Image (cartoon, helix red, strand yellow):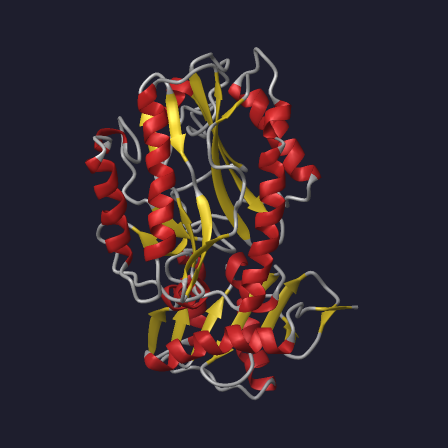
Length: 393
């Protein structure tokens, strides 16, 4: 038999109580979640089933699979209709106001649970959990620090993988192989249904200027219309850049890092834009303090690009991304979002990937991305690979 709860009692309580405070503020009696990322957040593992979190007290872990998990609060179910009896057995009252993951739970599941619980009121608990998850505990921050170390080790070895005549896809496969051998779990968790990606993005030359339907900072044609983003299969040409933007999920908590490599000499415009990206990151490290509005940081970055005559290339060329940074952790797109109309306010414990990037037509993408830990003294980078453009040839 294996214990279901992989978090320490103290860590599990810290996470649960953050959500419970937000629940009580909205008058929610209990929430029921079954999204993998949220189950992992509350227990430290992914399982098939639900987690029920009351506004007060411990949670109840409603498991369908795998069998033979045990521990305090574990109750097995075959179907959602079993949940009320399991709550009763645990001495937990049925909620009058029930919170469901309305942003991500399938409609049919919501309808079925509404019939099972028959609550007087329902609410969307997704924003509450996203808010709680946006502020990392010290334990979560340490897991991300460990991912950042491994992530950096992979990027430092990228130049040794390049061979003349390689395609962008061939180079990506080699980087992914190295990353997996270094311990990357290979999982790229993204919240929502509108974004898809494998382990990350390699953009070379003019392919960086190809728009994509996804809300990513950079695009790319991809290898097939079924996944129209990223490497195109074209040969890497002289006088172009190679942007490497692969996730660093080594612990269940991801870091995000972008670095740029080149084949041959680059025009001054590309070099200037890359330096602007580095300078924006230095600004962010000083100004990204708890209590600062996220939109202020976006405008500060955009102003720096405009002052240097780079606005037309900032966060894309043919198609521009509407943000310059995003929270991350269990998923790559968490809160807060560094965007011009963001209502988010930074807090100590936020983890933010800042990615001020530029696309130079015919040359490719330039700019860096670092994962930062927001502290009372500023933003501390967890991703430390060299930031200058590194020549592959």
